[in-house]
Length: 307
Image 1 (cartoon, rainbow, N blue to C red):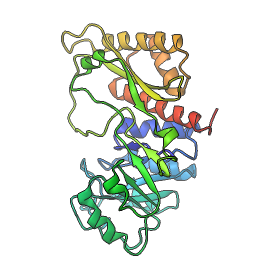
Image 2 (image 1 turned 90 degrees about the vertical axis):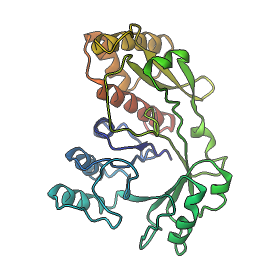
Image 3 (image 1 turned 120 degrees about the vertical axis):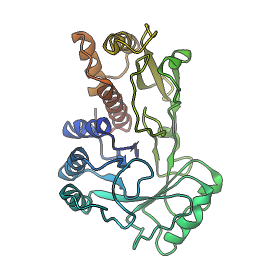
Image 4 (image 1 turned 90 degrees about the horizontal axis):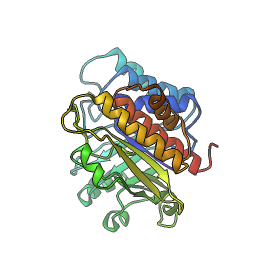
C-alpha cells in the first residue's frame, strides 16, 4: 500500500483528478490529503474519489494552511461549500485521519476506522489516550524505534524522500540522487505500507515568487529497483525573467534524457514531451502537477496494478 501525502494545493488536486479520471491510480495507491484551504477543487476531488469508489485519506485537523475547520469538525463560518464537502467526507470511501501533535488532546469517538498520524515521541501520550479503547486502522509514523515500539496495530512509514534545495539552481550540484526504496522494503521492516510527500517535500509555504531557475523533478526506477529522482534545471539563470524560456531549456533536457535512458512513459511524462514539442509553457503549477502525476502512475505500475 502506497499513501502519497499531499497538501491539497490546486496542482496536487488536479493531478489526482486527472489520474483518477483515466484510471491510472491502482487500488493500492491511497492518497492522503491534508487540506490547506476550502475550495471547489477540493470538493470536486473528494466527489470524484467517491464516484470512482476509490479510497482517500482526509486529514480532519490539518497542521498547515487555512482550512477553516475546528477540531470537532464544525466550520467556523457557515459556507454551503463546506456543507457539501462534509456530506462527501461522510461517505464510505473517505478514511478520516488525525494528526497528533504537541500533546494536543484529540477527542475521537472511535479510532478503529480512522488513521492516526504522529511525528514525534512527544506525540505518543495523546495518541495512546485517544487509542486506549480501539487501535486505529493504521498509524502513520517516521521510521524511529522510540515511536514504532509504542504504536498499536498496523503501521505506515512516512518519509520525506525529497531533498529540497533553497534555490532551484542548486539542484545543478547534484542532478541525480536516491529517492526511496520503501516500495520494496516496507514489509520486511514491519510496515503495512509506505508514504512520502512525492516531489514536493514536507515543507509548506503559502508564498510564491518567480524563481531565477526552473527545475523539473522526475522520479524513476533504477536498474536495481531503487526510486531515484533526476533534476532538470534551466541553463540561463541570471535573473527571474523569461520563465517560459527557462522552462523550455529544462523540458528539452528532460525529454532527451528520459528517452535516452528509456524512462517508463506515463501520462505526466507524455505531457512534458508535448509541451517540449509545441514550445509551450503551461505554468509552474502545471509543471509540478505533471511531475506528481508521473510519480503516482509510476508507483501504480511498479506495484503491478496498471500496465
